[in-house]
Image 1: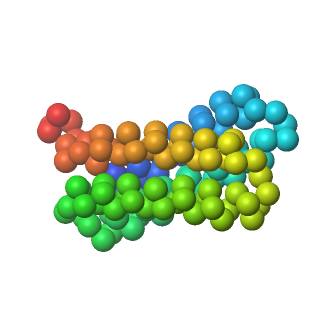
Image 2: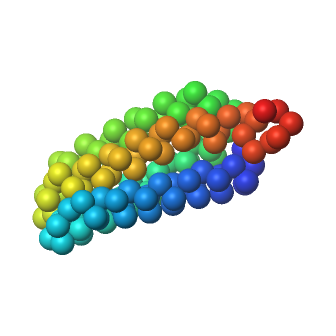
Image 3: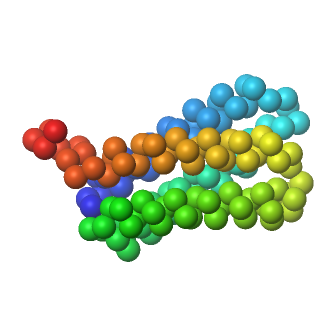
Length: 124
């Protein structure tokens, strides 16, 4: 995978995270905005980390990389629900819903950006 694809993936994570943060912050009260920010931040950082690791570890096996990414997303949600939310004392619903929204949206865009001809006009 080229550095260009990695940058596209990271840019997509940033755009999706910003959109979720803006919309979710507008939908909750001021006391719940911290939970939304933490949920979005954890999801964005985790997603960027997982992209980097799977791209480096499995450059030629997109299916295995996607499967590992799905397992890691599930792991983050479990850890957040059982450890991070109680530890940080934030409301669970806004934190977890914003986190899952970012993870879901980036999961949808990942196969499109990782496709063999993505970013190459000749192969589309």
